[in-house]
Image (cartoon, rainbow, N blue to C red; front, side, top):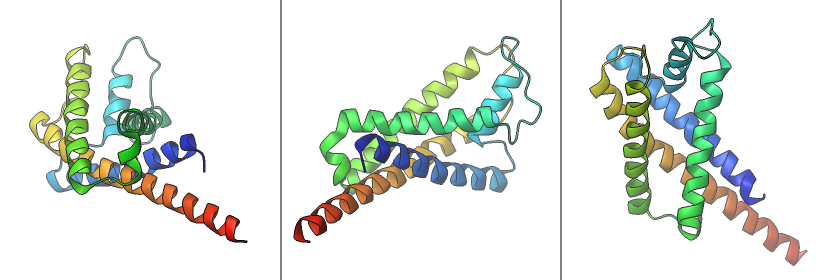
Length: 161
């Protein structure tokens, strides 16, 4: 598997685990914390963008969310190339926490610069977003590492054959 493919797969897996956590927190706290839905609400409430009929399932928010996940993994790869193959637990947690802070700052800027941002309990949203990014990083780093290890095993078995 090529590096770009590993980055995409890791981004998709990490984003899926993050989204599942956000979905669980949304249900538990009876708040809207699901990132793709919030993105769709931002798009829907923007005068400059086309209307979205279904904020829950429209592909725009979901696509943007998954593209952001792949972009985060690509950034990890650029910054953290060697460690991504054998990440340490502490390194993953630190990277996840840093990603959480970056994610919170991005969402704060989007909400602050929007004329009519969607409403939710912001403190709760940012708190769950921070934890969700740690989960994202754990899942993405694990997926990338597993893909790399499988690739190494396949190379070794080809050489032995």
